[in-house]
Image 1 (cartoon, rainbow, N blue to C red):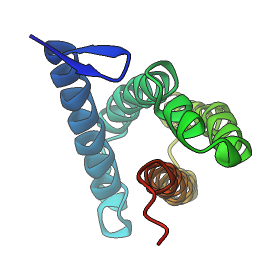
Image 2 (cartoon, rainbow, N blue to C red):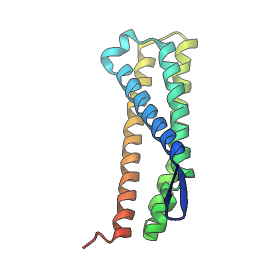
Image 3 (spheres, rainbow, N blue to C red):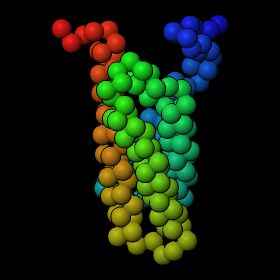
Length: 158
């Protein structure tokens, strides 16, 4: 079954897969947040952390790829060309956010191969929390962009 949206045909099964991937991404992010809470750090299982952050890295790559490949930005720009600079800025942030997260994964992997110091674990936790805040701000700005484009498209500025 396909749904026609303008000139784009969306496969319903594919759309469901995208939704499931987004759900898994949010679940992994929530798990990592809980694992890296200050109260949890003394009992942190470094192997579990590395595995979790690796899965989250893969889901983050998929998340950004889907946003870029399936028109989240182009639809906003087509609906409201005045938003093109904002859309381009947000799209460019994907690369820097992903690179930042990859560095975080590498830092967490060092916990497995070096003496684990409490300060190193705390460093990973701080960097993760900073990344999560940056990602949340980024996602919020994407949402605002889509709403602004939608508002322009339907003429809701009255």
